[in-house]
Image (cartoon, rainbow, N blue to C red; front, side, top):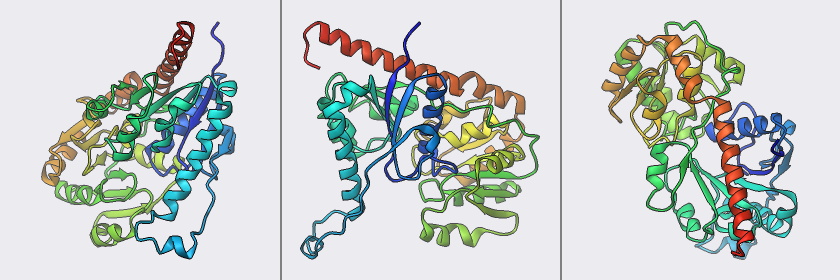
Amino acid sequence: MTRPLRVCLIASSRFAIREPFVGGLEAHTHLLARELGRRGHEVSLFAAPGSDPTLNVRELPVRRRDPSPAARADVGATPREWVEEHHAYLSLMLDLAASGGERFDVVHNNSLHYLPVAMAAALAPTVVTTLHTPPLAFLESAIDLAPARSVFVAVSDATGRAWAPHVAARTVHNGVDTNRWPVGPGGDAAVWSGRLVPEKAPHHAIIAARRAGMPLVLVGPCHDPAYFADEVAPRLGDGITYRGHVGHDELGDLLGRSRVAVVSPEWDEPYGLVAAEAMACGTPVAAYARGGLPEVVGVEGGALARPGDPDDLARAILEAAGRDRAGVRRRVEQHFSLEAMVDRYVEVYREAIRGRDLRGEMGVAV
């Protein structure tokens, strides 16, 4: 019998890991930490204040610091929030460099911050980093400092290809807890879920739903009030409603009672967890064919549209509405389950540990 692992899981210092989740990254972190713990692994989750206390959370030391008048006068000064986040991760990495080898078998960087990547050479445990975004400048530069023993995981083949010029990454698709997303009966309206921000483009979903002649309910946190006021609010009414940021149970019920879920990104969606969650409820997805969404939706899960084309998205909405709901659910069960995702991560962790131990036995510096 293999022994349980001691996992240091590094999350966001900005958004708490708790329901209702701000986005897919936070939901992914919560699922992974919870399932690893359920399987008997010892998980220490370093995350933003206010995260779910049932997950053995160690709060990242984000301390408010007001710059002096002289510092504020510096025209090249970085924003206060950036400095606070930088020091939170720096403090964590220095702590792990001092004693992480005694406390953890592996460090999993599930944040978007560059310091866990750049400082990986200072740690005894191998650092596994999940790439949740297309290439970012800070992460690209951090990879140049990462030791060869660092391990990188991409949440989709598409994201892995985007990062290929900088680093090789194996794919571990995000998983969905199908027990928490039950199949629903469907309904008459479409649904859009996620952060209401320009790169998610809910206004495209509104335009497409109207052209398809289908009511639409939008749910999610409003992170860009100016965008919401300019592009979303004027389009509400006449069958288009915004329900706000709802909890898990309400969202699951809404997804299950929807005819189609619309996903309309104006960026290359790294994975598309909102699509997988809707599909787990049996609700087919109409999505722009960007980033990882073609991998998630496939043929069984709905229909794809030309990116940036609301007319084609309207066509995809009507096409997706004809998909068999049982087949949509089955696609998630077969390809994107929570169990499969965590199995793969445990495999990645154990490979990283074996590689570190082998290099140590051979006298290679780690």
